[in-house]
Length: 340
Length: 111
Ligand SMILES: Cc1cc2nc3c(=O)[nH]c(=O)nc-3n(C[C@H](O)[C@H](O)[C@H](O)COP(=O)(O)OP(=O)(O)OC[C@H]3O[C@@H](n4cnc5c(N)ncnc54)[C@H](O)[C@@H]3O)c2cc1C
Ligand code: SF4
Image (cartoon, rainbow over all chains, first blue to last red):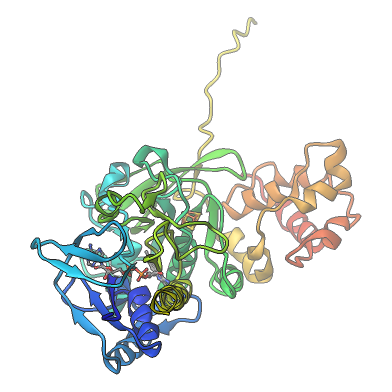
């Protein structure tokens, strides 16, 4: 018995799985596609709902992984998972054996180009919430010509709850991300007018509704219920948008300096290949379906194959980390039982 | 004279670029809590006037927030100032006071 457990993906869920497995006396091997650990967290600036710097959470996790005896293989991609969770195949064709496998390969960001009607990648000054995180890390929000925007529109549910792009699910974190960024833009540019176009406000976590209320009352963000149907560039490089104000029941038009698309979470691109394993089941959304949604959220139908984090559904960082702990304990339970 | 019934339809779109938002902004400065409205419709659900007429405080308030003032003063005449809406508002907005303020300000404004 080697005690080796392969963790696919070194995002927050994978890192936490390794930390807990190490504490429990196992030998975790993290296999990460990118050159460094951290997953999407590496791209964020400040985290909702507390505005904690992402670097703080990331730095802490990295330090704790470093203290373990985990083996970390970066720039390595897993292409297949052995039927019973006894190993994986890497993209170079080599095989790596293990006692169990934890799939923590996360989600993909919805490519906003697919919603062509919003002009992402076609017109200047159409950005995504992912771009805005980068802009904040680089010092603040700026238009293509370097000026600060005076009117900004956020659009929720881009690539979520949308049959036209085959993404029927709600991505959960984009509402609160949109609210957080609206506040941040207003903090940077107090004179800016900010309009947020939403369908429902899904403030599911502790402190989220409170942040929404703060965005309304303290930061004067205008929330308009209605989906923007299309955006077009004006002659002076602004963006003209059309929506219905569904609370009034009349069309609404306006032009803004910047349009920010709150992109959702879609299923990770490796999920289809992983799903060739008969013990791995996919939801119609492409996320992996756990054994059951109540007491088996980190389990598959194979006793040696586990899940942690957003590979099964959209989640925030805290929830993803908790699943790392849960998966590690379930691995320990299975492997210890097999030993005795 | 024969009238043929032809007329020109005014655009129904709310055009934020052209609307005068200054009064809307002034109102929000005076009552910032008005911005916390979550459009639940509790005020309209409990409204005595809404039971008998088309009056909807939620809708009137939203129109004013978008800079659409025309006809609003007349709409507000339907309110009997009973104040039930204030008891119902989950965000704690003093809705009755909002109606009084809107009436005072909008009576002189016809666009
Ligand atoms: C715009 C935006 C802002 C957000 N802001 C916040 C916030 O402020 N607060 C908060 O709590 N949450 C936030 N979230 C959610 C947060 O990003 C996720 O909860 C978190 O990243 C999930 O971690 P994970 O480990 O499950 O997945 P990921 O972060 O996606 O990590 C998965 C890792 O697996 C790797 N991988 C994938 N496939 C393979 C493979 N085949 N082989 C090897 N490695 C592979 C990937 O490279 C990646 O490093 C935000 C999300 C979005 C979209
Ligand atoms: S969290 Fe909000 S923005 Fe995201 S998909 Fe759900 S409703 Fe839409």
